[in-house]
Length: 69
Image 1 (cartoon, rainbow, N blue to C red):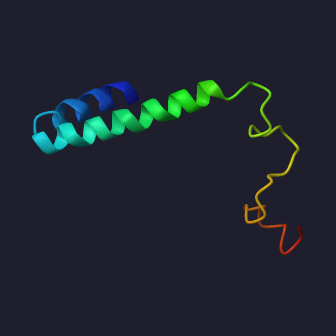
Image 2: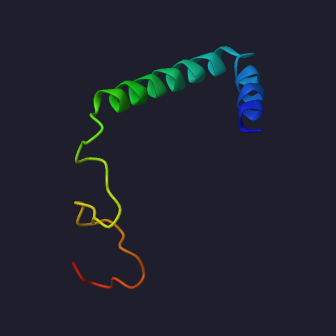
């Protein structure tokens, strides 16, 4: 269903010059994300493992965390 909606939306956007610009920008964005994802090794510390906390001190820790760090 998601693919069908993407196709319909893409075809609708492609009808206008402004839509083509937006599609081009979106394509570049997704291309960069894919290349960055492929360059990162599988055992990278950036990927979180279950049971480990995020290194970001401002990350949301849930309703029970309160002010604990």
